Amino acid sequence: MKITIVGSGFVGQTTAMRLIQRGIGEVVLTDIVEGLPQGIALDLKESSPVVRFEPTITGTNDYAEAAGSDVVVITAGFPRQPGMSRMDLLGKNAEIMRNVVERIAPDSPEAIVIVVTNPLDEMTFLAAEVSGFPKDRVMGMAGVLDSARLRYFIAEELGVSPLVVEAMTLGSHGESMVALPRHATVDGKPLPELVDEATIDRLFQRTRDGGAEIVALLKKGSAYYAPSASITQMVGAIADDTREVLPVSAWTTGQYGISDVYVGVPAQLGRKGVEEIVELDLNEDELAALREAAEGIRAKCEDLSKL
Ligand SMILES: NC(=O)c1ccc[n+]([C@@H]2O[C@H](COP(=O)([O-])OP(=O)(O)OC[C@H]3O[C@@H](n4cnc5c(N)ncnc54)[C@H](O)[C@@H]3O)[C@@H](O)[C@H]2O)c1
Image 1 (cartoon, rainbow, N blue to C red):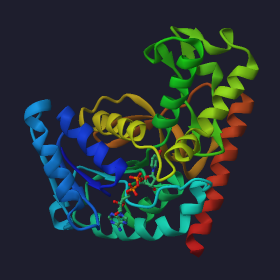
Image 2 (image 1 turned 45 degrees about the horizontal axis):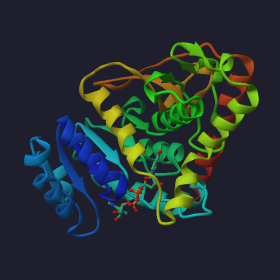
Image 3 (image 1 turned 180 degrees about the vertical axis):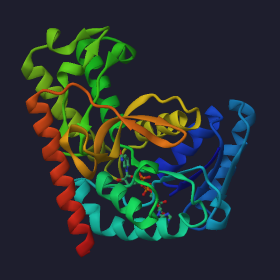
Image 4 (image 1 turned 90 degrees about the vertical axis):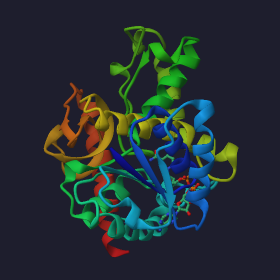
């Protein structure tokens, strides 16, 4: 697998580290800042004898080195600062996304694209439009991260290992994230049997605000360890063709009564990208929340064409 990461900032570089340490493939790390990807790549290679992995990484400012990529992860763009919403990044990051996709797509026509740049669902749509790639080969990373945050918060609340907690969030990466408490379990037991409704609401709200909580603490920039872990899980599923079901921003074609918009849904990931969107058994409230999230994203994507 040849995996190109566009953007060598915090998310890009931690993703590069995780991918090469796991031996998932050959990584090409790029950025517009001269020397940055080269420096990060060299630093990572120098850690290889100690950590024990094959140093299969190149840092470059030249898109030619990304040609023939199997997977392209796009992390280029501005992160939030304290007090900003993800949507405040729309205009600036749309320009970057257009530029990146125009340069990367022609030489990697078979690539699967994973968008990370915020605002996530809208940037994923833009990447699909600009690349002209089949929509099942373009997806966004947010649901794995939001679900991981939720799983951690549940574990912390109950004083159990995060490893025994399962939970999934759908919808948008932001305020319209859809909570699915009925589908969350701790050691196999449904979450609603273990905590009261007020606690569930608090945990889900903390998850919705999970990115902002970290932005407020860091003061400069946003989260990257949990995001890079989430990207790595998605790339791993694609590289190993595991067909595991992960929540990702995927193009809908009628699932859940939603069409022609990118929104967070459970999807089987494999060598072809999004192999299939999985339809969970949602109740009316959950379905309504998911459809509302989808309509919000659709409206923002329409705004994109006016920029
Ligand atoms: N989807 C998610 O769940 C999620 C999670 C975390 C961060 N993010 C988003 O990911 C993006 C990156 O976050 P970060 O913390 O790594 O930011 P960062 O500022 O550390 O890194 C961004 C990098 O992009 C580079 N860049 C800018 N324009 C470019 C271009 N045209 N071509 C190539 N590279 C370019 C910058 O030079 C910089 O190195 C932000 O938009 C952030 O909001 C999304």
